[in-house]
Length: 412
Ligand SMILES: Cc1ncc(COP(=O)(O)O)c(C=O)c1O
Image 1 (cartoon, rainbow, N blue to C red):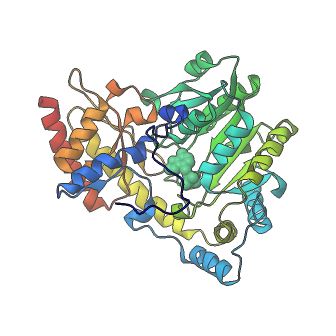
Image 2: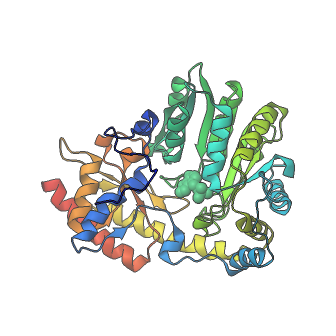
Image 3: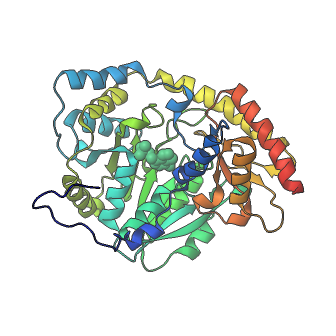
């Protein structure tokens, strides 16, 4: 029995605190599938996690000069708040990096953020009102739909076409446009499909955005991870267009847990109000982690040779992944061109969904992947996303298990 504390208030109230409505619209499948995996682990089975794109978890380690930059910043006493837009050297380094990629932008239009994620949330919150629409790819990286759920705006999916290398279907995009559409999200190179959009397609997308007065959110977090080299920045094709470009230390610099990213608000007066609104919101969250901002400077001004090795390793795993899935009966995959994801499709038995396949694979073989409907695809499409960062030998063993399970599932 609890002792009664003199003067303490009674807290015996029967009604529970309810969760806000907006949470019911919020989903983030990549992490939500983990709960089921933990249950499977609790039965004593080993689970191989191919759900999260974290290179560190698979032995791709942060370059030592970045670790040293953070450690030095801490030792030097840079442990206080920074300016909400970020420290000047990091902003200057990011501006110089964009400029070198053909996107001339001044440091004044750059913000250092807690990963690309925060930059995306800042921009969408600053630009899109409740009830307005944002064009989001299908399949999409789910952060976009999650943020839109929080701010009460609507994701409107445009199709990307597996029959054409997962490129955006411009006709579908046109049809999806409404009078309330404010922004167009382009993820290029793409998660979850691994697609890179050719220059001609990019030009059409920019022309479409210009014609309809849309802000483009250019998510280039995988920009340095094209298998044949860095992919050009979208805004290089139209530096005056209203494009907000994003990148971070998470993927190409192998430090996702540091939550360090940067964004550049394109050098056009059309984005000045948006930039001011983004900075105003950034003030409200104080700053991104200070010591990690020193690593942004180090990353963008220092040695990037780790990327050469990383790209080669990714290319190897991508080839292996595409070959193995395309050789499985009832399965096919579009070969990725960048990053570390593939989106295979399995022929589903009648009445089954992508989640049935994913859950079945987890329980039967201890392999965790994410269902395509978690990225906005129809559940009956049979798509699922695989993260192929494990070693080639591990991937071979995992794909043997997937093939085994797919055979049983098809006959079920
Ligand atoms: C397309 C895309 N954008 C943004 C992010 C989030 O990146 P960050 O760690 O920089 O917030 C991810 C992470 O997986 C991603 O795949």
